[in-house]
Amino acid sequence: MNEECWPVEIRLAGDRRVLNVAFENGSRFALPAEYLRVSSPSAEVQGHSPAERKVIGGKRNVMILAVEPIGNYAVKLRFDDMHDTGIFGWDYLHALGRDYDRRWATYLAELDERGLDRDGVKASGGSQGGGSCGSGCGCH
Image 1 (cartoon, helix red, strand yellow):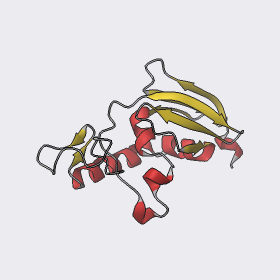
Image 2 (cartoon, helix red, strand yellow; image 1 turned 90 degrees about the vertical axis):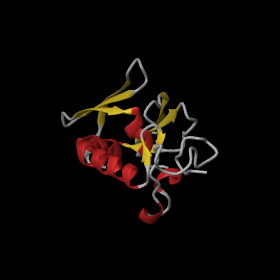
Image 3 (cartoon, one colour; image 1 turned 180 degrees about the vertical axis):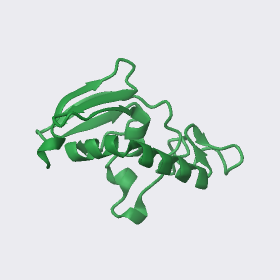
Image 4 (cartoon, one colour; image 1 turned 30 degrees about the horizontal axis):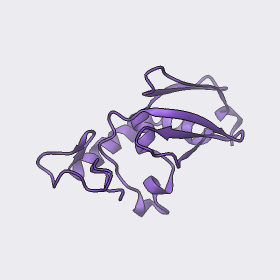
């Protein structure tokens, strides 16, 4: 890990929809819960290769229930949709903040390509649902 990516503050906003992270190098990011959820480094989201990565819709209103430290190298975020398997290392959190605009634009384009949106499945695309979680994420 680069020393410059060491966090000096990690704070969950009162509404549980933003994780504020500040790093030793002066970088500060307000990372929306939705963005963190759909960018989770878990195998459920990322798969075991880039070809297996899932694009998850329907997470606009997701909240972070807990931020749990994992040693001195990461945090595990527990979301209110019961997702809690992603371990967010310091470098990954820094990259998510640094590259937010590009990553978010790519995510929105991928949702559109798949007929999904931030609230689930678009009315014109496919049936509602797509998985046992009912969110249209296709994760089940």
